[in-house]
Length: 354
Length: 196
Image (cartoon, rainbow over the protein chains, first blue to last red):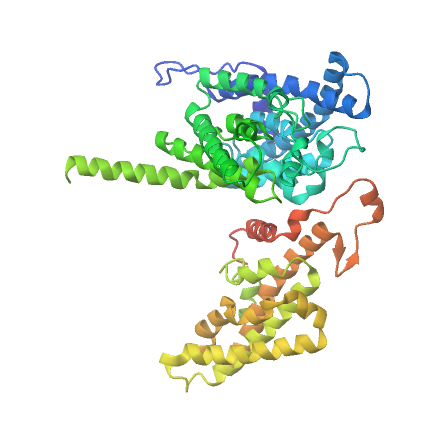
């Protein structure tokens, strides 16, 4: 049985409370451990997920012209989501267990949130084998080759999506893929239509905010995302500085783009479109890949917001501005931290007059 | 013979010395240009090693880089013209990267490190082996990139149509250079630190 130690240990600590506890004095004064943090994030994701189930069904029945009652919509979306999440967890945890086994380590909890996020940022009809390939790629090359959970400098969930975006663009771009089981609807995303002079294609601000628009499972309902943000900020799992500065950077850039005529979309609509809010709340705030210093977080968030809107408006080939902006800033986060720390050291030196 | 085998694995120019990576990323989207590129580099490396080794006692050290560049560029132009006249389609595919062989660090590295201090025949063999070591990696990378990215090998379709009908898709990322970098990383990872 020793051969499967990693797997057994993971099951043991996940399903049961381990009997081995620290006796005597220890320095940890907080009940929050990694599992608790992960569970909090998953709870914060639940409102968006519940709405996402309903919306997948709603868009489907709307497109085929059926009735859009509450329970059938919810059930349809759930059935679309379930295989995605099973495939994600089986493939991702498979890789994690394999690496833990080879390295003779315990399986880290990091994949629970990643595996929960991946189905929420995929189109509902994406082929399951692509999800499996993307998840395996993201876990191996985003995380395991750098040392596993806590050492990854890229957000694995976003990396999985970026992989699908570049490797299999046909399943994740255009308008069709966001509505489940509807081949009749084809065309570009609202943003692309508006940019090409069709302002009537733009959903109203209320639709964008409430979320009755085609999109990923998790990203459409801004109310649900705000509830999630409130949970994350209240429990201090995610940092409000990052969220705030992403919105500030994004809004400022959107205003500039609107005033200079680069993009006809209103600035507040820009923040509600696509994955901007979902990314700002759940992706940019990933404690491992974000900047760690307090001032660094402001820079990190601001640059994500600015870049996301810039990529969206200036490069028509890449509507995935938020995803690319967060991944890019993930790479720069250590550099930001380094500059902040160096600056701090320099200031202290000056005060001490060395 | 055994002393020349180093560049194939233990001393591989790409995997161990990480030289020539730029062209390895650029020409490996398909198998055919990768093989042609590998052969071109082998020819240029071997011949210029041989010539420089013949002249090694007469080249003034202060201008040796210029002399080396002259010899290398002579062979590069020769190879380029040969490709243009006999393999025009591949030459089009490789575009500037044939001309850029002159800047390939492997060739300058071998001239500096080996040919300037060894006799002509060992220099020639060293050039051949380094070219082949470079080519080996190119072929392996190009094999996976063409197979997974286009579903073909040497421009022949190998992924059956029934797979595509069943929902299989070519991996577009394989066509892009970033994936070539990741593949080279994977080969280095798989090779590990062993000294074979």
